[in-house]
Length: 155
Image 1 (cartoon, helix red, strand yellow):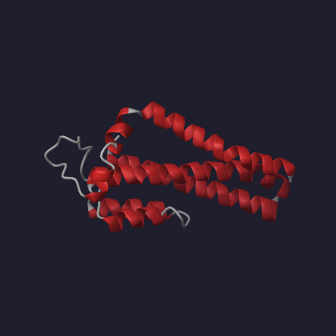
Image 2 (cartoon, helix red, strand yellow; image 1 turned 180 degrees about the vertical axis):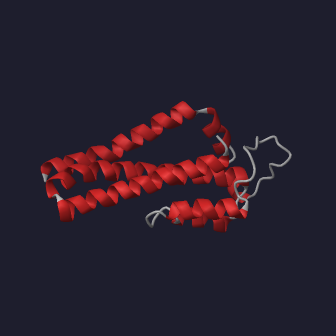
């Protein structure tokens, strides 16, 4: 998976979970409160997990592509309003931040700057451990979902 495809995928997932959460909240507060009370915990946990995954992969891509700090901050902030991750994906692609492939640390093109120097092992670890990362994302989802379900069942 290329950096461009990774950002596009995680942007779409984050936007879809936003839509799911907004629809669940609409159901809870306007259309069907019983259905909404059931859906909101799942939608919230899915969105929380997608949000954290988006931030993680944003840092991985920033470290790999040596993004300027302004792009890193803009990418993180784009995850807060609904659907703006899609705009950030488009913007980063147009600016050329995703033009490079995955750079190994011993590559001559790898010139550390302060953020990447501190995160030196993040890109290789992420690329080398996809199963561990997937299990961590599933664990985060369950960790976020469990308290939400408890409060939904008590309501």
